[in-house]
Image (cartoon, rainbow, N blue to C red; front, top):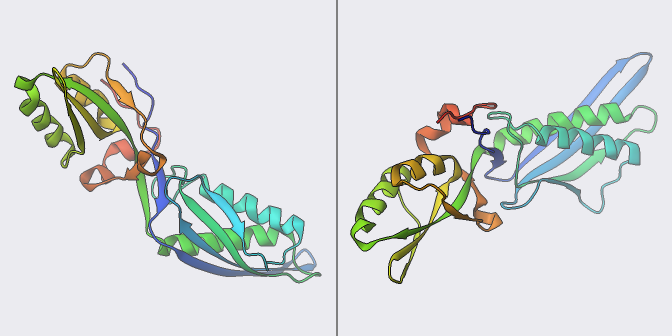
Length: 219
């Protein structure tokens, strides 16, 4: 059966500043724009573009900057996945009334963003989900062994009733394989808090085919 691609995202792990000027002369007029911005990691939040209160920029140029930045945020640097948990803060702008146009500011914004992104430690994120398992006592060791083999360090919450109830946090891409290995037909999943819903891709998986845009898993 063909499954939809995994919904990977990209983000940054550290704050970084980018500053660029766009200076050209063509079509009989000057084209000038200067912009300084900062990228900030905000885990668990949607991407946003903000500005310091003292920023002075004409409305049409400001809208051009926002459009250019959101276009960059739609396509991350590592594998072209949408970015997540990134705030772009506009810090400074220089505008010359005769020579500054929205197109120039859009280009300056894109260049400043790219400069900051290189220094902000970009990383691929993979979605995680919660899995609830009802396990008989005689199968507990085997189930935990399977989970540890697939995931490594297993974050498990155990409650004791007639059976053991395990609440496990796992990469969503491993759910079909885990279900197959444990013989689960209808897995009971639960949502995680926004701060833990996406996590950096670890180890060899970061270079695996699963992270390539458009990859679809066959089972």
